[in-house]
Length: 294
Image 1: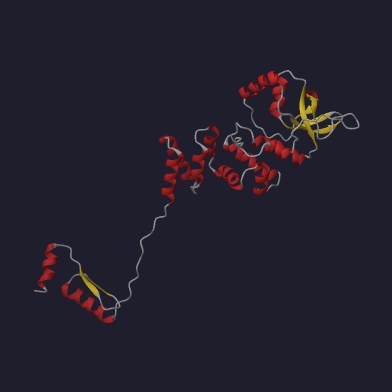
Image 2: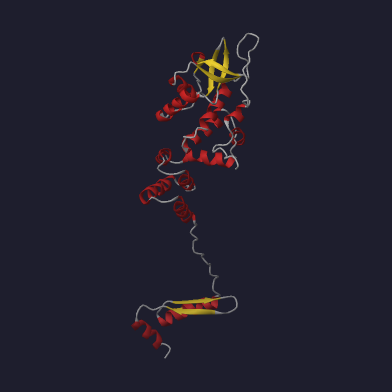
């Protein structure tokens, strides 16, 4: 059986280039060496000032704490060395909080060198890879990586292992009206509904369609069909320009109009074929016109 692909692309371990095996070694001063995975006192780890996480589900955090109390921390945290046995968290805020709840005094951590820009980027990437994120939160993470880490969509694609089209589709969600973004965050509508709404150009039309979705509980396929119908261009009637009548026909039309006391329209093509149309408003008028020919 093939290994199931991760929903959000490459694992963070691949991005950070964390070694597969846990190595514990010390440098000349007796401190854990850069590149090593070793146990570090929780009291010596500072919070990440660039942590983008804006919320943490209490139930999920408690569940992780119980797991750590029973099994320990399976995946090491990632920290950078500040010197003098002090460290700053790069990745693993949730695991660190859960470890504190579980009563641990030290945690396994991978030590690496990182500047502020790299810390921000790694924290954002780790945040994006959380399973419980909704599409809007993922979109915000992608947008922050592009703006704050000066990445192009192509570079971001390489960072997170997602194709550029997927990243672009997420970022486009941020152009939807706030009312629709909120519904997407709350799970009232799905990513499929939102992508269909994005293809509607006018924001008011987007909101109107969104309200129809809620009112009629439309499926994604039904919304896509309605949007396609909205986007079908209305072909205006083709206006044909009549060539001017030769003078002899124009004179004849004017003569018949006066003779019959009725509106006469005469049409003629370049080959000499044409028609004469005599208009009338009532049966009496029709009989009067006919009397001119009898």
